[in-house]
Image (cartoon, rainbow, N blue to C red; front, side, top):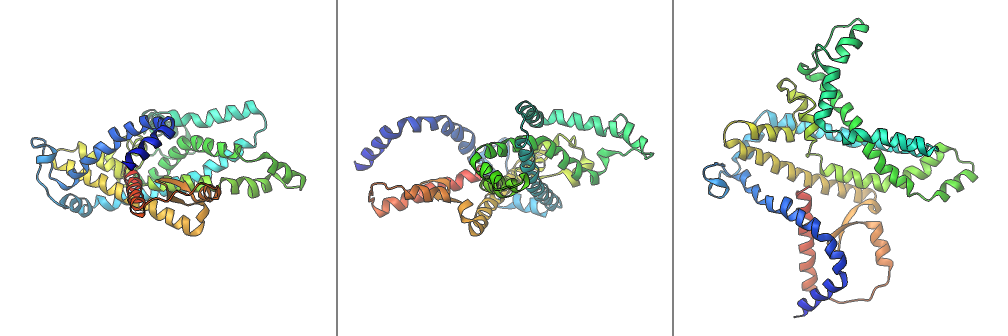
Length: 358
């Protein structure tokens, strides 16, 4: 009876706030939680005529096939190497671009530059693939037809030489993502108290010193948050970048094949057995992503506890925010220890499931 009264009281007090969560909750249930039942396909020999539930179980054979395949090392290496480069290289480019944009004093020029740098973010990778093709086409590409002959060199068959594609993919990724990332950091810079810069000017600090001792330290919490989230998605490779831009060319697989494209090509291949193996690869992707998030957060918590994420009240918050919240005096309400433990377990489980779905 007390539980019902407590629930009704909470609904009355926080009804307006809880109602704002309903659309997002419905979205997560329909598109994240309900499809989770498909995880069992990774442990089955899926057959279309029998369906998911009636298909025979085959244990870990789908995983054995994936790890025994020579492609397992290639796709894992490519996925981790590319995404680490994208995360930390992108961090440098994004912050540098944001600081550069913030230093523009003319508002019209600043808005124009922001618009120009963020435009590639809104382009589909199908369009980007044709732009890249316009540069790299063997016969009619801009590079082979104009630039290379001007240097007295022979044309290159870009779509049959995988050694060039790590550089091409990195350049395309930075070109497409730096604008959006810089705007995020630019918003963080806009939130810095201007009195700090004014005081620094009075003390004779140069622009570089202001950036070094005010701007960068203020952006560190945002850098840590975005880096942790990106590390969690390190195995969720950008499918459009690795599939559309190289035009899914088989000769380039050693340099462009990642887990996302591997799963897709596996699903598109003949035979129903590929469904189970593709599901096993996707499940492996989720497990490793979750482990990376927790490991990264643990390392950050050891090095810089104020920037780490911890569980508090069933949500993920910054530790420095908890110190502020805990400093506010609130009426003490003693709850039964058993009920409290059950509540923490449920919320911790919810947090774990949420990161599995990222």
